[in-house]
Image (tube, rainbow, N blue to C red; front, top):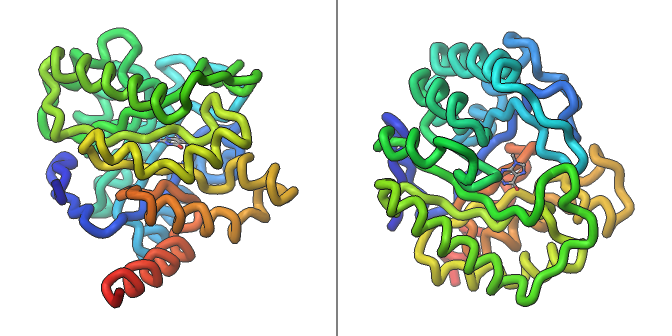
Length: 278
Ligand code: 9MG
């Protein structure tokens, strides 16, 4: 499969594409709420599009380790006005990072083309809402535990096997609910209930998840697995982020979720030029 239907856009993922992160949370771990005002958010989106982003991912609930949950009302107030403003001004695929059925439904009504759920549609009514909305792609992410506690000594019998098994179960839940498999994207969830060593084992073995026959998404940008290894603060992790992006793309990731769009697009162009000339 080389294209994904994302609302009224068709996304060719033969060559890896970049998803730019726009956080609209006040406590987001790396850009700390800088983009919560609509005009500033629009400027940031314009730059990400200019730099080569194919998708803009908006999140109204922080999923950083230890983060507090946010009410439905607050999440809607953070996300929907920004989504509306982006769709009015730009012709770009917008992904909404949410685990709440009401937010999914409202976001789709306002033009979201992808639902990015770190809880893989396990919350109430999510499967039902997305079964009704047939043109929207869905990213199912693997997370062990919940954001508040997920980094407390996560244990696996077989890291890749356990993640594969989780995906098989979630794919089945989707298809049984009436969601076509062709709409799904899988994300192994770097940093979500994985130790430092487990995250690098996952990165090294990510290609094994290709056997599930669905596009893979990887989000590694500025994460602790980079900062803890390199002893770098969050805004000093660009080199590490680019290294992980290139390894993920070489291991089959078709969408790379990042803060630094321009640098990641350049890095992926170098990879692509090398691949076509092998
Ligand atoms: C919202 N969010 C934060 N990190 C993420 C990741 O690695 N993948 C996806 N799909 N979403 C993420």
